[in-house]
View 1 (cartoon, one colour):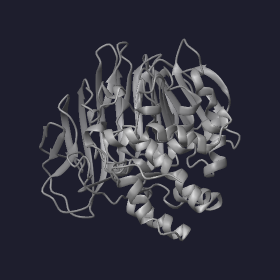
View 2 (tube, rainbow, N blue to C red):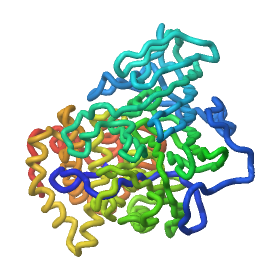
View 3 (spheres, helix red, strand yellow):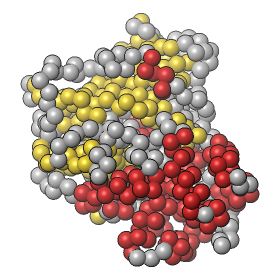
View 4 (tube, rainbow, N blue to C red):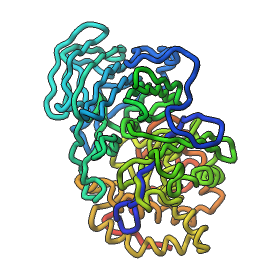
Length: 494
């Protein structure tokens, strides 16, 4: 997610970057596209996708934990391994029909299965391992009346329907006023934004960052609309006036990094210099590459020079009717405002695919790990474009960082009611510049490249991160990190 200087809301077109969108040829065309001469996909989840066998689920095993900032969302008893989501959107009625199969591992013994869900969607059927089970939904909590045992694997099936509604956001940012989760526009298009949570507004989920899982999506909507989600577009089929897109996400993702959008889209296929396939999904009838979306290949090229190879198979961007820019797994979602669609935002959101997506904070108190590094890399890019030094750029940001810290708290101990404020962006960015000056460019950029590679598809907390940096650099940095990330006052800069 991006932030303007001083913490103002992002204004431009909403764009979502989707890693794992794989299309080779360049060009612009209207969906439906990518049709294959194969049988049409089912409109509901299969329960066990052909390319996600039991052995493949090991990559999605997580060390779950109770979140320290938002402990009421998510539950460490559940380790989600795979979500198979069949979603049908009816724009004439603003009605979502869902069929879900969740494969999960129990991390402990319990008389019930705790998940996050919502009361706007009525459950018509719920099973565990194929057997009907009683359940209750209260607030954002789904309680399934079925015992589970530690380290045993279960398959929960769910059928539901209704009109999803966003949940209140724990933030004072202006671009969170609509809430988090599933949003419906005045034209009945949809998109999702769920940081730090909100996935529970449209499917049953363990909605916490420490639990990463694999995903398959089967998205159906009246033609010529189409559904866009994370991963690779495996198949598109149009039948009886309905378009169905099947997406497969091969790398585990936290729920806040998952997105679905339904609208009348055209998409353009691009490619980075290193060969990363890129898709841009933009509203039909407008520019195929609105705003800075055409800079996606250049953003990937620039970041690969700094961070090493792009960590996923593909990259995607989806433009939605919103004011923010936000990364999601293998994809970036951009709002339709000038700032959100700017090249600087593209660099920031693409940087999250290394810092945030391939390695994800295990607790929301460590969101600075994502935003501070993405902000620093954006600052490096901006300095190059402006013909100034990175020191000059940091001096500009330091002018208002003190006020951001005072307003919302230290970056790693922020006010839970002010999620996503500027304090988690600019203070950590300044910190990274101080570390760079302390250890030198060679060691600094080596650490930047090696951390995502060392933690691929995993999660980490601050202690693991700090210990790793100290080990790699040979520096004692405890006081340094404590001062910058937990201190109420901004440390003195060199």
